[in-house]
Length: 340
Image 1 (cartoon, rainbow, N blue to C red):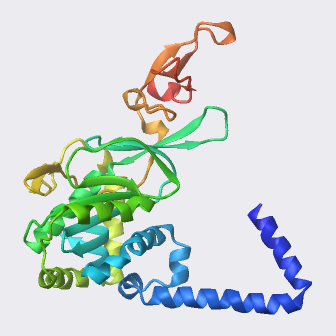
Image 2 (image 1 turned 90 degrees about the vertical axis):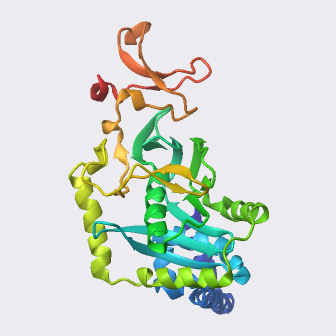
Image 3 (image 1 turned 135 degrees about the horizontal axis):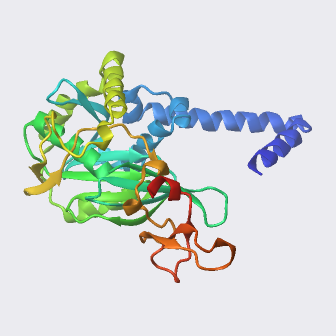
């Protein structure tokens, strides 16, 4: 529909050159002002990504939107860094998407650009994404590594590098295209939100938390971390290769931390323990890899139970039905061959 309206508008303007020329000038002026504003932003100055780069790269655009929501805090002394390649103990790196250093402490953002419905809890190793398939009461399920665990890894090595445990806030932001369902988080200073709530969340933290860092300390931390945002392409590629190699070696399915330098927990934020695991590739796993104990109803978030049809032509057939039946009547028989 949008394409049709655009085409009709262009056709209308082409038939009226007197209107067309001023319209083009206005459009050019609008883009010029947007680009000039963007080029003056900290995001551009640090990443060197052009305005059109972020418009066509969902990952970069998500990072920029987090900054855009919070850029007003720069007037209160906050400083931002993006794509920080923090060294680990094994000559590898872990990448922080967005970091805000402020008087309240360190705000570590993990940006997710998934769509669909998201299910998960703080201490569940894998979270789930469900997407509609176009068929009635059907959905496609994928799983991905717990982003809280992923951000805990970032925080662990960030604190190790800085050499101090400042108050740290772990904030997982999902895109506007996501609906967060039954997300359970209990640890203080850990948040899972849609990106459009980030300004309200930070405002609430600013209102209720005391100032901890001085402007001088903010600058010192910034100066330590800034070079890690300007690494050469070889380091970036090595980071990607290391993650891909771990994924290819089924590292993602490991139930232990053997042969890694990552401890099970670390003390941070008033000695609250957080679980950390080595960074892994962010690749959702298809429903073919989900076992029957992990199946979740995409409509209400309850567990799916294996059942047997009793009536009509489907009598005797196996299927997964929602445990909330009859309140929820979702059924799924797509996983039978993979889980029995």
